[in-house]
Length: 209
Image (cartoon, rainbow, N blue to C red; front, side):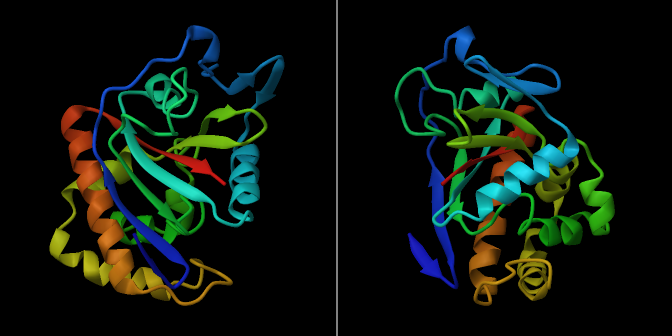
Protein backbone atom coordinates (compact mmCIF):
# COMPACT_ATOMS: atom_id res chain seq x y z
CA UNK A 1 0.00 0.00 0.00
CA UNK A 2 1.39 3.40 -1.05
CA UNK A 3 0.56 6.80 0.44
CA UNK A 4 1.16 9.86 -1.72
CA UNK A 5 -0.41 13.34 -1.60
CA UNK A 6 -3.14 12.29 0.77
CA UNK A 7 -4.26 9.35 -1.39
CA UNK A 8 -3.73 5.76 -0.38
CA UNK A 9 -3.74 3.30 -3.26
CA UNK A 10 -4.51 -0.37 -2.63
CA UNK A 11 -4.44 -3.20 -5.13
CA UNK A 12 -7.49 -5.18 -6.15
CA UNK A 13 -8.87 -7.69 -3.66
CA UNK A 14 -9.17 -11.20 -5.14
CA UNK A 15 -12.62 -12.69 -5.61
CA UNK A 16 -13.52 -15.24 -2.95
CA UNK A 17 -16.65 -17.12 -1.92
CA UNK A 18 -18.96 -15.01 0.18
CA UNK A 19 -21.67 -15.56 2.72
CA UNK A 20 -25.20 -14.34 2.07
CA UNK A 21 -27.17 -12.14 4.48
CA UNK A 22 -30.61 -13.13 5.67
CA UNK A 23 -33.63 -11.48 4.01
CA UNK A 24 -34.15 -9.39 7.15
CA UNK A 25 -30.73 -7.86 6.67
CA UNK A 26 -31.26 -6.87 3.06
CA UNK A 27 -32.15 -3.21 2.56
CA UNK A 28 -33.49 -2.45 -0.90
CA UNK A 29 -36.91 -0.74 -0.94
CA UNK A 30 -37.40 0.99 -4.30
CA UNK A 31 -36.73 4.53 -3.07
CA UNK A 32 -35.12 4.09 0.29
CA UNK A 33 -33.69 1.71 2.81
CA UNK A 34 -34.44 0.42 6.28
CA UNK A 35 -32.23 -0.30 9.23
CA UNK A 36 -33.91 -1.87 12.22
CA UNK A 37 -37.18 -0.04 12.84
CA UNK A 38 -35.89 3.13 11.17
CA UNK A 39 -36.75 3.97 7.58
CA UNK A 40 -35.29 6.67 5.38
CA UNK A 41 -36.82 7.98 2.15
CA UNK A 42 -33.96 8.72 -0.22
CA UNK A 43 -34.06 11.82 -2.43
CA UNK A 44 -31.28 13.20 -4.67
CA UNK A 45 -30.38 15.79 -2.05
CA UNK A 46 -30.21 13.05 0.59
CA UNK A 47 -27.70 11.14 -1.50
CA UNK A 48 -25.26 14.03 -1.75
CA UNK A 49 -25.72 15.07 1.88
CA UNK A 50 -24.93 11.55 3.09
CA UNK A 51 -21.87 11.33 0.86
CA UNK A 52 -20.77 14.83 1.89
CA UNK A 53 -21.04 13.98 5.56
CA UNK A 54 -19.00 10.84 5.05
CA UNK A 55 -16.07 12.48 3.26
CA UNK A 56 -15.61 14.98 6.08
CA UNK A 57 -14.44 12.16 8.34
CA UNK A 58 -10.75 11.39 8.62
CA UNK A 59 -9.52 8.07 7.29
CA UNK A 60 -12.52 7.20 5.14
CA UNK A 61 -12.10 4.08 3.01
CA UNK A 62 -13.76 3.76 -0.40
CA UNK A 63 -14.27 0.32 -1.89
CA UNK A 64 -15.14 0.33 -5.58
CA UNK A 65 -16.65 -3.03 -6.46
CA UNK A 66 -18.76 -5.00 -8.92
CA UNK A 67 -22.01 -6.80 -8.13
CA UNK A 68 -24.78 -8.47 -10.09
CA UNK A 69 -27.45 -5.95 -9.03
CA UNK A 70 -28.44 -3.64 -6.18
CA UNK A 71 -29.55 -6.46 -3.91
CA UNK A 72 -26.29 -8.31 -4.44
CA UNK A 73 -24.37 -5.06 -3.89
CA UNK A 74 -26.02 -4.51 -0.50
CA UNK A 75 -24.75 -7.90 0.65
CA UNK A 76 -21.22 -6.51 0.37
CA UNK A 77 -21.90 -4.22 3.34
CA UNK A 78 -24.82 -5.85 5.21
CA UNK A 79 -23.14 -9.09 6.13
CA UNK A 80 -24.25 -12.23 7.91
CA UNK A 81 -20.76 -13.77 8.13
CA UNK A 82 -18.88 -11.13 10.21
CA UNK A 83 -16.36 -10.74 7.38
CA UNK A 84 -14.91 -7.33 6.46
CA UNK A 85 -16.92 -5.09 4.16
CA UNK A 86 -16.57 -6.14 0.54
CA UNK A 87 -15.19 -9.60 1.26
CA UNK A 88 -15.85 -11.93 -1.66
CA UNK A 89 -16.43 -9.16 -4.20
CA UNK A 90 -14.14 -8.03 -6.97
CA UNK A 91 -13.09 -4.68 -5.52
CA UNK A 92 -10.55 -1.89 -5.35
CA UNK A 93 -10.06 -0.13 -2.01
CA UNK A 94 -8.59 3.36 -1.73
CA UNK A 95 -8.54 6.47 0.45
CA UNK A 96 -9.15 9.98 -0.80
CA UNK A 97 -11.30 9.37 -3.89
CA UNK A 98 -14.96 9.84 -3.03
CA UNK A 99 -17.35 8.79 -5.83
CA UNK A 100 -19.55 11.88 -5.41
CA UNK A 101 -16.83 14.54 -5.32
CA UNK A 102 -13.28 13.58 -6.29
CA UNK A 103 -14.24 11.10 -9.02
CA UNK A 104 -16.51 13.56 -10.85
CA UNK A 105 -13.84 15.33 -12.98
CA UNK A 106 -12.45 11.96 -14.11
CA UNK A 107 -15.95 10.79 -15.07
CA UNK A 108 -16.50 13.95 -17.11
CA UNK A 109 -13.19 13.58 -18.92
CA UNK A 110 -13.68 9.90 -19.72
CA UNK A 111 -17.30 10.30 -20.80
CA UNK A 112 -16.74 13.55 -22.72
CA UNK A 113 -19.55 15.32 -20.85
CA UNK A 114 -19.80 18.32 -18.58
CA UNK A 115 -20.29 17.91 -14.85
CA UNK A 116 -24.00 18.72 -14.94
CA UNK A 117 -24.64 15.98 -17.49
CA UNK A 118 -22.69 13.46 -15.44
CA UNK A 119 -24.49 14.26 -12.19
CA UNK A 120 -27.91 14.22 -13.87
CA UNK A 121 -27.88 10.42 -14.08
CA UNK A 122 -30.09 9.16 -11.20
CA UNK A 123 -27.86 6.10 -10.79
CA UNK A 124 -24.85 8.24 -9.93
CA UNK A 125 -24.14 7.91 -6.19
CA UNK A 126 -27.66 6.61 -5.57
CA UNK A 127 -27.84 5.28 -2.03
CA UNK A 128 -28.64 1.56 -2.11
CA UNK A 129 -27.95 0.52 1.48
CA UNK A 130 -26.61 1.54 4.87
CA UNK A 131 -25.40 -0.16 8.01
CA UNK A 132 -26.70 1.39 11.23
CA UNK A 133 -26.62 5.19 11.17
CA UNK A 134 -23.96 5.40 8.49
CA UNK A 135 -21.16 3.16 9.71
CA UNK A 136 -21.01 1.90 6.12
CA UNK A 137 -22.81 3.33 3.09
CA UNK A 138 -23.15 1.72 -0.35
CA UNK A 139 -23.84 3.79 -3.46
CA UNK A 140 -24.10 2.96 -7.15
CA UNK A 141 -22.01 4.15 -10.06
CA UNK A 142 -23.59 4.63 -13.46
CA UNK A 143 -23.73 1.99 -16.17
CA UNK A 144 -22.70 4.67 -18.66
CA UNK A 145 -19.47 5.34 -16.77
CA UNK A 146 -18.82 1.58 -16.49
CA UNK A 147 -19.20 1.14 -20.24
CA UNK A 148 -17.23 4.24 -21.23
CA UNK A 149 -14.38 3.36 -18.87
CA UNK A 150 -14.30 -0.27 -20.01
CA UNK A 151 -14.04 0.82 -23.67
CA UNK A 152 -11.75 3.79 -23.07
CA UNK A 153 -8.32 3.80 -24.72
CA UNK A 154 -6.09 2.72 -21.84
CA UNK A 155 -3.10 4.51 -23.36
CA UNK A 156 -4.89 7.80 -22.69
CA UNK A 157 -5.50 7.22 -18.98
CA UNK A 158 -2.28 9.04 -18.07
CA UNK A 159 -3.56 12.13 -19.91
CA UNK A 160 -6.89 11.87 -18.09
CA UNK A 161 -5.05 11.61 -14.77
CA UNK A 162 -3.08 14.79 -15.49
CA UNK A 163 -6.27 16.71 -16.30
CA UNK A 164 -8.01 15.20 -13.27
CA UNK A 165 -5.19 16.23 -10.92
CA UNK A 166 -5.43 19.81 -12.19
CA UNK A 167 -9.20 20.05 -11.84
CA UNK A 168 -10.20 22.73 -9.32
CA UNK A 169 -13.27 20.69 -8.35
CA UNK A 170 -11.25 17.67 -7.19
CA UNK A 171 -9.24 17.16 -4.00
CA UNK A 172 -10.18 20.55 -2.60
CA UNK A 173 -8.24 21.39 0.55
CA UNK A 174 -5.70 18.59 0.12
CA UNK A 175 -2.17 18.48 -1.22
CA UNK A 176 -1.91 18.28 -5.01
CA UNK A 177 -2.45 14.65 -6.00
CA UNK A 178 0.20 12.75 -7.92
CA UNK A 179 -1.05 12.08 -11.47
CA UNK A 180 0.85 8.79 -11.52
CA UNK A 181 -1.14 7.53 -8.55
CA UNK A 182 -4.37 8.68 -10.16
CA UNK A 183 -3.40 6.95 -13.41
CA UNK A 184 -2.78 3.69 -11.54
CA UNK A 185 -6.16 4.01 -9.85
CA UNK A 186 -7.89 4.66 -13.19
CA UNK A 187 -6.17 1.66 -14.75
CA UNK A 188 -7.34 -0.58 -11.90
CA UNK A 189 -10.85 0.90 -12.03
CA UNK A 190 -10.92 0.36 -15.81
CA UNK A 191 -10.02 -3.28 -15.24
CA UNK A 192 -12.84 -3.59 -12.72
CA UNK A 193 -15.26 -1.93 -15.17
CA UNK A 194 -14.19 -4.27 -17.96
CA UNK A 195 -14.72 -7.38 -15.87
CA UNK A 196 -18.07 -6.07 -14.63
CA UNK A 197 -19.28 -5.26 -18.14
CA UNK A 198 -18.24 -8.68 -19.42
CA UNK A 199 -20.11 -10.39 -16.57
CA UNK A 200 -23.17 -8.16 -16.91
CA UNK A 201 -22.51 -6.66 -13.46
CA UNK A 202 -22.80 -3.09 -12.25
CA UNK A 203 -20.36 -0.89 -10.34
CA UNK A 204 -20.77 0.32 -6.78
CA UNK A 205 -18.79 1.95 -4.00
CA UNK A 206 -18.95 1.27 -0.27
CA UNK A 207 -17.87 4.08 2.05
CA UNK A 208 -16.50 3.29 5.49
CA UNK A 209 -14.86 5.74 7.93
